Structure formats: structure tokens, C-alpha cells
Image (cartoon, rainbow, N blue to C red; front, side, top):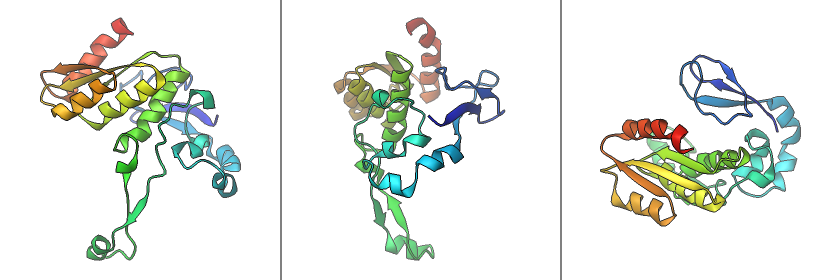
Amino acid sequence: MYMTHLACTACGKQHDANVPQNLCTACSKPLFAHYDLAAAGRVMTKESLRGRTKSLWRYREVLPVRNDSDIVTLGEGFTPLLPAPRLGAKHGMKRLLIKDEAQNPTGSFKARGMTTAVSMAKQYGLKKLAVPSAGNAAGALAAYAARAGMEAHIFMPRDTPRANVIECEQMGAHVTLIDGLITDCGAEVAKRKAAEG
């Protein structure tokens, strides 16, 4: 484990990485994980990467989960880079590549963050997870929580496309539709999280 601490993206306050949290206790801004990159680099070499599985988790040293047994994965990451020569030429680039994140298990880049978030939740012993979302984050949480055997609670604006709602419900998530915007959904999560665990 090479994560050293969490730090606020706004005020810089350091937080304990062993405590489940996502917002700064001083200013309520998001926290970022910080790593001992020198130590991680001594283990994560080009040679060591060659023999590892082709997934996001091949980069274990710079991901926050301590034990492999806590990793909740659907095979995300290692998505292809597609050449885009005409677009590159239009913008004066000799070799433009575009990452195709639609190849992830839940169809978007949100699978990368959610595999990590749900794995951390498992590490911390959490059983119920919630997210405000109107799309890909909701689907990703529903999928990874289902994989982990955890409850997923999705708070979506009432005008969210029906396909996104159905996707979450079909994976067993509890979906609550809110009159309002994503910010209103986030406020509802904040209001209910302590009372509902």
C-alpha cells in the first residue's frame, strides 16, 4: 500500500486515508489520494507490468485498496486507443489517438472510478452505497455494488432518461427520483446518509 494520505483539493488539509470519507472536514471540498510515488515506482516497473493482468488493477501500487481480496472488478480498464488520423490532421497532430472508454463493462469511464470506490467501500466494511447521478455513474455504482453484494441507492432527477433508471433497477439498485437537479439529489443523499447508514 503506497497511499500516504488524503488531501483537500481546495485548502490542502490532510486527512487520514484509513477513514471512509470523501469531503474535507474544513471546507467540504473533494479529497484526493496521495501516494509515495518513489516507493511505488521501485515495484511498478515496466518489467513487472508486462506479466500482469490487462486491467486497471495492474497498476495496484497507485490505487488505494490495501488488500487484493477487497478488489471488486468487472474487468475494467485497458481499453483500446483508436487512431484518429483525419481529426488529428485537422488540428495539426501527426498521431492522434482516442481512448475508447465505451469498452468498459458499464459502457463509460465511470467504471474506473466506481471499481475503486466500491473496492474501498468493501475494504472499510460498508454495506450501503449512494450516489446522485443521472446516467453513467448511477449505472456503474449499480453494477459494482451488485458485484460486491452491497446495497446501491441511486438518487436521480425525475427527468432522467428512463433507460438509465431501468439499468439501475435491473441491477438491483434502489432508485429514488427527485424533483430537481443533480445538486438536489446530492443534498438528499447528504440528508439521509447518517440516518440510513
